[in-house]
Length: 478
Image 1 (cartoon, rainbow, N blue to C red):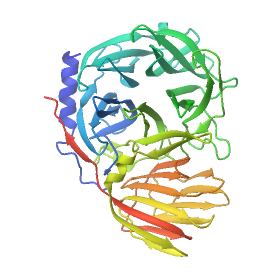
Image 2 (tube, one colour):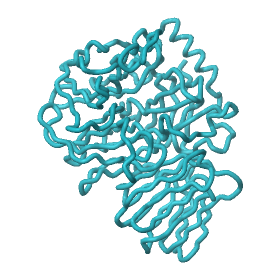
Image 3 (cartoon, one colour):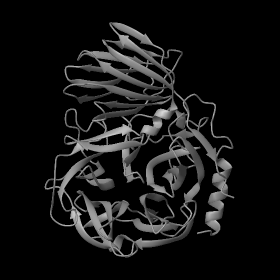
Image 4 (spheres, rainbow, N blue to C red):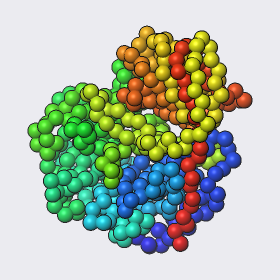
């Protein structure tokens, strides 16, 4: 920390980041967090510290297609006005030289304890699955929430169970019953995904106490685990890799979702049925945290690794890719995990317009909008910006690209009865919440041409708002 490599990486990052926040391209987002330049993926270290919300994220500023990862950083007092902070963690240690990978934040003793995976790929003829890779669990501590005062290696490959590959990563840490617990995703040598449970008395020395898995193989790797209790139910959320499509289930190359967990994660437990968290094209690696008001808030990555569709903003002249979802409040209701945008988002609304739709109705919808629809019939469709068709018929909710999908085609989900729908539209993103957040579909969407607006085919009550941009200022960290 503060070695020559750190100083050079900090200097290089400052050189490539734009002096002004907003670019001129029409696909940069107004109220979603995105990288200043380059690449963004998993949200990391989500927390509230001394009254401010902190969002860290996987950040590769030098290449919009990826590259060496750091922890980028935003903070906010209200999730409306944000500060772009200096990078919190650079890949400047021997245990994270090829990337500061995903992890979490434990707020304890008025400090931030940032747990992460340090990635090392050794040179040689390796497959980087069973050999050649170091996946190291590390801890950085920050006293002010802006820069670390220490950084240390806690565990490396030899410290994990012997039946595992080199793929052990993404520590999620919390305090419970006077002790500290950590879960990490893992891949066995038999290509079976599972979850490791660790326990600690001091936040530094960790013991493996349990392994959570399924009786039958469920994917080859469980990434980005999140284990928490909400509304009296324990939830094991993660992003499994290696699940084959099954009809309308698992339509993306990778999925994410949750098992309800019954019993004690430290000992005897059972898992309920796996439920997907999102049925759109672009949602992966969600993470949650508990804020100071007791709300369980979740943020996901609006992207999909290894997908066969693309994002045009990654082109050299634009030079950025991906964003995060809006923060959502999580509840467990009637056996279903629901997600709805936090109430703070409503402060961005302006120019309310309410209309009763019948037959074919055209509505003026801004490039940034919040749209609510309560259908009167169980068959209808809407077309957004001549680009994306959303349809409900025969108990199926579908999202189909007419153009602007850049390889995205169609996603479908069974919904027995659709009562209401909410769309958050933001220049090149659409977040869909149906039945009060019981069903979610998120996608990147790139409208082309002059056709803007919303066309409704069907009957129902439509309410639209123009959405204002979040405020972002840049803190130079000098």
